[in-house]
Amino acid sequence: MVQLVQILGLPFLACIIIGSILGYLGIHVLKREVIFIDIALAQIAAVGSIAAHLAFEVHGDSLGGYVCSLGCVFLAAGFYALVRRRVVQISLEAVIGISYAIAAAGALFLIGVAPGGHVHVQTMLSGSLLWARWPDVVTSLVFFSAVGLAFYIFREPFKRISDDYDNAIAGGMRVVWWDFLFYALLGVVITFAVRMAGVVAVFAFLIIPATVSAQLRPKGAGRIVITWLASIVASTGGLLFAYYLDFSLGPCVVVFLGVLLIIGSLASRYLQQRLT
Image (cartoon, rainbow, N blue to C red; front, side, top):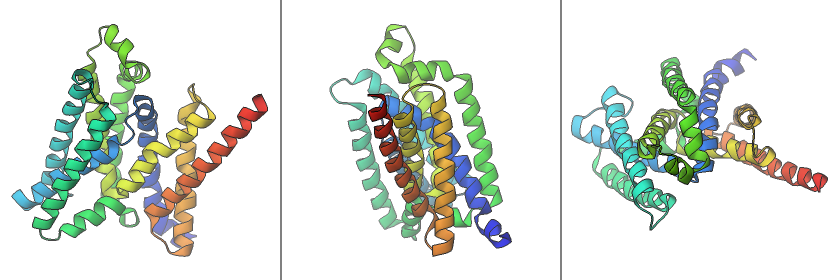
């Protein structure tokens, strides 16, 4: 038991911290129908990190690497906010997909130029949950807490825009600025979360628990509770499965999140049949 806690203690704490903030953000992301926003922002942040490595010879987890990554993310946040308000010919989800493809191509080009570029790819995809350190966890907790506080303070305008974008515009809200703030805060979370958990696990934590809660409770305050419970259960099961069968931590957590999604779908179908 002691060995189990020593090996999985920090990874479990990292999963809980990441799942808590991403679970809340996932509810907004589903309402806004921008499902692939985290993959796009993660890819854009990776471009900034690799560019910093090439230009300034700094590592991705250094202050310079984070500054360049966040700078790229903030530019993308402003771009997405303006596009959603100004461009009506195509959906924002299509724009996000296009920007992801361009950022991925740019990252692949820079990886081919940068020495040790394959390390960036591996870290971005799979993360390093097993090697989570106290400084990483504490730093993420501080930043995620600050982001969570910002979302609590501005919860009403964020909720209003997520629930009905057109109605928010009709009501005179400055939706571009609020959207920029939303995507910028989301980008901060994703930039730090991907460093630890990898883009696949981060995407799963953002979308799957929120989807489970939407299936079981489409409306109401109970959604966030279901979202957090789904993250905790999947993290616990995935980490234990990886520990006893010697698999990678991140993929196992994602698999358990997928299992919960299937269970949630079956439970939702059963409840609907009972009500009808």
